[in-house]
Length: 208
Image (cartoon, rainbow, N blue to C red; front, side):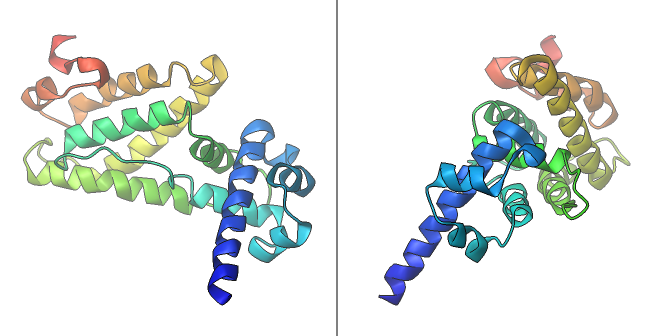
């Protein structure tokens, strides 16, 4: 019986998280309400406060778990896999509600009690893993700061997706991220490494 109740609690939390992501994605944090989320989830008020305690708790969970549905690109760690990851994220932001809501909330942190920076550090650490591998493989310029570049890439991606959401509903985000790379790569990697990198759709940097 205890196991059944635990499994039910896990399912209820998941339903709440998904419903909250949908509402936050549609109307943002200020426009969302516990009532809207409860109606979308089809659960009781008590379930919300048992699992998350508040709207702020729900929003924080959506921010922190935004990558839960992602299937990161495989392959050898390095510069190509990092490029593939960022273009994959650009594509998933067009379709993945949990990711999209988490990113929106991370950007629109207007409430004093909702200040959640750790997700930016998480993405920077994730990017830095491939950059460290790239450095070990000799794919970066001498003196390139992998940690600094990882943080800069997170910032560039964040700004690009904001502009893309306003301009095209993120339809042009993959192209914007491609442009970010083409601007930043000359300061990160040697020309021969850049020439070997392939963008989504089979484009090769050196041929453009």
